[in-house]
Image (cartoon, rainbow, N blue to C red; front, side, top):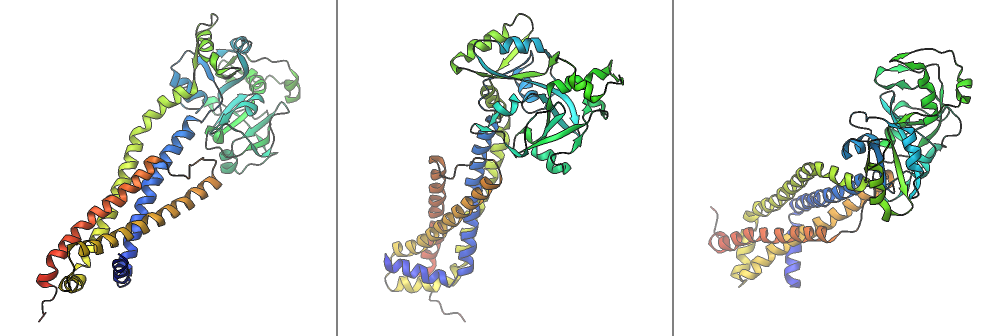
Length: 411
């Protein structure tokens, strides 16, 4: 066996370029196959945990996905509003530990505005129960304070202390008479929070006193006076709930949906997000097919490089045969070369993948598993097995032709 390894090594040295190209093509297929698999698994986990540790999302009676898309992802058409009294009643349930109101509708340079309170930054969690953290500044303190998501701050080149003006819904009317001050900028989360401006619910209600019958009416109220008026919200888009015990989640869901004063819908986020993620399955399948195509291409690249050297190696194989080498020797020479190509490609691919995953994990709040799971180990074994089987073809071809033309005198 040692002699075969030595002969294989010396043979590869004479064809370094083709060997390295084959190794590189296998490495690319490993990076893509395992990388896509890890990306799918990590993105699924991140997507399903876009909102974490929130037990129930409540909205006016719409479909579960509509409520989730609107209140969590800020997509879909606006929901029918629920009364603020309903929020207070539900918050008073014995099973409720915390409740956060949400109101959507306004815009800031095309980005969504979410009106809420300081409890949002205290209780909202994502990924593996991560809290929202501030890159700069802090949360709400004063009436006209706002907090920016990381993407807004980066795109608009904004900083703490800047003055902003909110636009009224789809009308594009700016509340230019009300100066809001940026007091905080959130760290990147890769969630809809990155593209959201947060303001206080009471401030949102106050500035809309001047919006009557679909038109702006200047009531001549100073910003200072407005901030001291005792204005209570009348309606909100929905609410996030945290329970004292998750064992009560089904009973609370039933209580909310049987709430007598208003027709409300309670959505369990994890359940609804899993359902929503199924809509993306076709895209996952396409990515895996592309990776599989790359792997097949890599195998054919290896085969083509081995076949392309057959003419160069015919005399070599014929000499081995004339010295008494059997079919097993010829086979192992090709098999070992294929094995070295594949193992080198797998190792190089794994190192490249780990470096790429490390860079991603350092620069983005995206949790990725570095350790290979059972399925991924199986994929590696399949890659090695397929490569070894593929090496049989050039081995057999070389064995068949070695005696008949390897020593033939060329004229």
